[in-house]
Length: 211
Image (cartoon, rainbow, N blue to C red; front, side, top):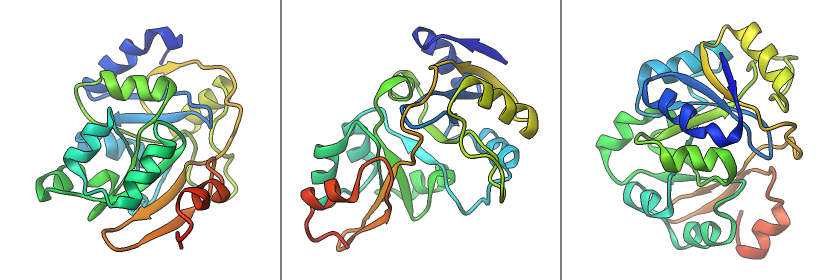
């Protein structure tokens, strides 16, 4: 496992494109990432975390144009994206094409969990030739420690999980230690799924009628 600085994000990009796993810092906590279309790489993350397969990873979009190309965005989804992307919000969005839904099912089907990130994670997604999937760097077990917020906790996670991580970007301590806020944006309904780093008051200020 190679530990590098945020300025060396291209090393993480190359690792992801080669089918390897990487760990990337965010303001919330560290995320373990791979090529979203590489079923083997995604499966290795699920196995290492002991994460239920029905709990999809998040797709990290490289741009808003890329999101619109693959997903149907309702008016509410567009408003939320305009207000909070890039940032700490994830949207559950319906796929446009069955082929994409099938290929990238590890990030959700018939709807995918999508975010447009800032910081190092956003840089990785923007530079990679593949789509990036991510989830928190921790074991998905009762009473297990929460997601890693510093390099020492990442090392502990890798040691306990046996995850075959190729590159870790050391971003120091993640200050907010909170989840992405998740909102489901169907064609005819918008609902809050999970409150996280983006507060419910901020969501309600943007969409007063959200459920």
